Length: 115
Length: 113
Image (cartoon, rainbow over all chains, first blue to last red; front, side, top):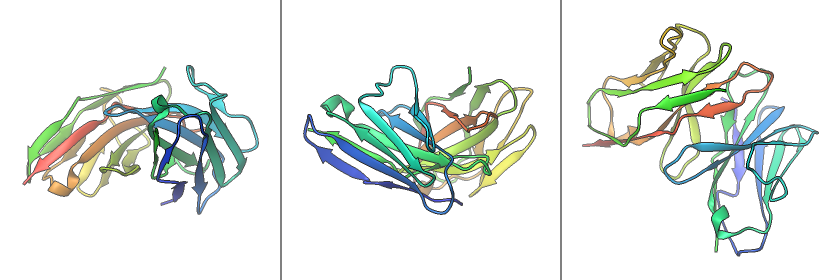
């Protein structure tokens, strides 16, 4: 199957700093990428959907100025958590889809801890 | 809108026991249905999928059948192993131009020797 690589897998940052998470499709062109957040013992919450070359569409309740998403190419999307706070600590997962596939493929996830 | 309801866990089974994790959905149109598995500390992996009514997805001994009449996609395995311990997510993909996936809350499975 198609491979999606997410980096870093773990990051610890100080409160007030910004963190960038990368999501790459390694062997296909990702026309659409999705960013999810997973809370402990809960399901995945879709944060935003991005199409290459256009602005991301954020889900209700997600602060777009805090969670900056860039989908500059067909193989790379980035999520930047700006001015991180401890409550932003979570597991963030990206997924990517090519129009030719029925399903989206997921990255390995990034465990963010803000101290 | 779309929604997925799956049985709450955790589910604890002995090795070689039969597994069923129930999943029902609400959707417009003709969605695709998926089961994803998340092993401890890892991201999600697609376990199996079905794209139309009556399709059966299968992988690694797991099976699920797309039942449109009951709007269900229950996951089954005849004999679980300790290595199957993970969180299982039922999910639905819409049939629009891009695949927005809606997840259930996940069911944690623990298999004990």
